Every structure is written in structure tokens, then in C-alpha cells.
Amino acid sequence: MSMPKFDETMLPILKVLQSGKILTMQELSVELQLNYFDLTEEEKKETVSNGYSRFFDRVSWGRTYLKKAGLLEQPERSRVKITKEGIKVISSEIKAIDVNFLNHYPSFIAFLAGGKQKTKEEIGEAVIKQFSPQDMIDIGFQDIQDTLKSDLLEKLCNTNPYFFEKVVLILFQKMGYGDFQETPKSGDGGIDGIISQDKLGLEKIYIQAKRYSDDNKVREPAIRNFIGAMSRDVSKGIFVTTSNFDEAAVKKAKDANHKIILIDGEKLTELMIKNSVGVQIKTSYDVKELDNDFFEQS
Image (tube, rainbow, N blue to C red; front, top):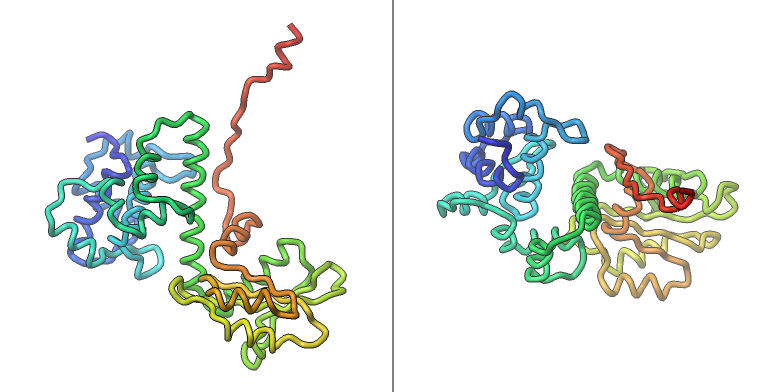
């Protein structure tokens, strides 16, 4: 059998995991090769630009898509397990799983939309539309970015809350603010950290960082308490969360006498990627075009 496309790995992934066992991605990749994909020695040695084997890379993308649709979950670091919905799909004796099938799941549609408001029909049109090579590069890059943002947010939600606070402070320092100061782990009065607005430390900014799940919005009392904890000589604050803010919280921050900036999970991951906090460059590409000025010399 030739090297499978990434969507051709999705049904076999569910079949391997249907007994309920929890596997690492490496263990999953090995079982798929043993039971579903008879690769040649040359195919086993194929790699992609990030250094991983081509087969492992395609299994990883199959895993990601299944996870975004809710058919897989990650109960432990770097391990995967089938969900009840995944078992339901396998029990239906489905013959194949592809992107069109996964479009039945709202969570998967939201993932493909990349945070933008798109209908299932619009996404479907995007899948079948003929793109130029440059379009495909841009779309592929955006898909990778969206997946990275989603994985980064999940990692932040599962990390130690005190470490999350430090990540936020490190981010602001990377963004060009001055030194930061961590507040005591208890009795901080609702303030998780203090940063200098500039390198000289002429003005301070209070930081509040809340590691919330996506369905747990920051509400107005949290903003009110944050404002109440700010001292008289500090007029600026930044409230950061992995989730988002309800309308009352946004209004409270807007109407406050202090200058309060709200950063939700979407914006937080964008800033972390832009400032290389918690992420690293894996592969770089140079896209070149014809230099017409060079040939005008002829």
C-alpha cells in the first residue's frame, strides 16, 4: 500500500483505539503500520521538512482533525484516547472518514473557520475551490497557525496556574515592557504581577491572569475586584484570561476610571506566537519570485 493521505489515517486511528486503550503518538503510529499500512522501507524513511517521518506527520494531522471533531481526546500529555462519540462512529460501521464527514461536528467547523464566522457551506466551498500555489501556501500556513493557537491554548489551560501567571509576565517583557515583579502566591489582593510600562520603570501596570476553561467567561465581579485592588498611584491594568469576557465585564472595564486592557485567549495566543513565547521556529521557507529589474539590463 502506498503512503496514505492524512485523512486516510483517521478511520484506522479510531479502530486501533476502539478498545479504549490510551496510546502515545509513537505507539499509535507503530500499530497503524503493523495492522493497516504496509509501507515499504523507502516509505518508512521518508521525512517532511520538520524532520518527522512523513507517515508520523500524516497520522499526527489525522489525530488533530479527529480531536477537533471530538472523536478523540488527550487525557494525558502526548497520549490519545477515543471518546464516546468516536466509539459511536466506529459502531456505525462507517467505511471512511474525511473532512466532509467531520463537517457534521460544530467544533470541527469552528476549528476550520479559524475563529471567523463561516458557515458549513462556506467551508465546503473553500475545500473544493481551485486555489493558486500562493493561495495554497497561505491557506496551509494559516491552518498550521490555527492549530498551533488551539494547541497552545489547551497547553495553557492545563498548566500550573502560577506558571501561567509567569508566562503572561514573560510575554509582556518580550513585548518591550520593562522588568516585572511577581506578587506573593497568597494574599496578593487580586494582583498577580506588576510590570514596568517602560525600561526605566517610570510607571507601573498591574496584571491579573486567570486560567479559565473556554466555557467559563470572566464576569463583571472579577473586573470590579481587579479595579478595587489597584492602588491609588497605579492607573493602568491588564486582565488576561485563557477564555473570554462577558458583556458586563467588558463594559465595566470600559467605564472604569482606570485604563483597563482585556486580553482573551484568542489574543493571548496571537501575542505569544508573534513574540515567540512558548513556541519556536521549526521550519522556514524562502519564496522567491522573478527579478524583472535584473533582466532589464540585457
